[in-house]
Image (cartoon, rainbow, N blue to C red; front, side, top):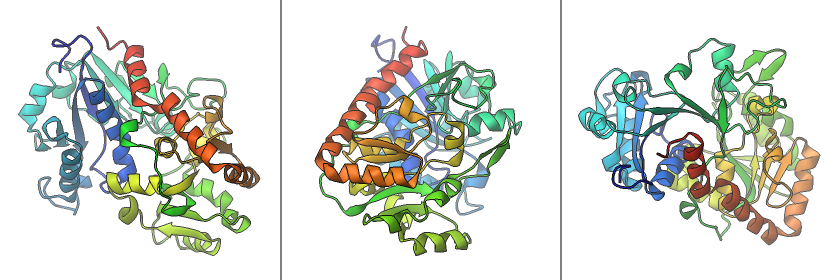
Length: 391
């Protein structure tokens, strides 16, 4: 459905990551919510994922025969995207899915590009698109890499800038804006893909996390760190309550001191590849949980940028209450029913007690929050309107 055939339909090119780091069910869903959400609204969506040769697994494999390609094929087939998606080897015209010629043809009259972290840089695919939107899903770090670390984040290739940091540009947020006017958005959830869940498989507070994603940044006396730096402050939590805490945690085996501390303090650690390594397993893990104990990267907490997790939005949609580490998001989302913000262990314990007082009420409230703030049918039309994508 094109903008010529239907004045309400747009041709959208979306660039993001599914297969460059395969078996990350959560990262995959962060992209799928946009692709499926735009399609649900009647837009014609093409997905392209640029992948660097050094990301291919096993090392030295061809694109065609890589684990990345296998994961990419499985994902796009499962969600009906096979005729509208390409995995593109950077610097070449090698693809999985659409051929490069087909990709160029399908993107020839695109109305708008949504480019996560500016990862698509191919001029042949970019140059004819009138609206090129930079999508920032990792706020604070993206802006600091550009302004402090002097890494080119490819802002100059874009006409509009969107971030999930609700406080970006406000006086409460200490992150530099890099001279850009950032539009803020909540992360979309396709609610039909995330119905209210019933059975609890993990009678515990759970979450999905990577201990470290990349290096930390020091700027103006502040340490913008990773989840490791946040969760260490809560090591003793499971010993202070009868609730169980389960982490689908990506952590390197050499982090022996932290692994030992987690286990000694009664955290249950699960292999993330096994339990959340595909979109289906990720959804089942979240929906089978009692509630979420959501830890934010230290950089989000320090910056008070107002980041709120797409993962936590999926818990809410599933009717699972969320305890989320405060990043400033409570200025933009109502808390106290279905959703709780915390900065200390005592606040976590208080929230747990409140949830247990009336768990059914908090389940219902969680779903209502998802419907009011994260429903893709609300989030995405607003985003398209703000960037002026409609003719």
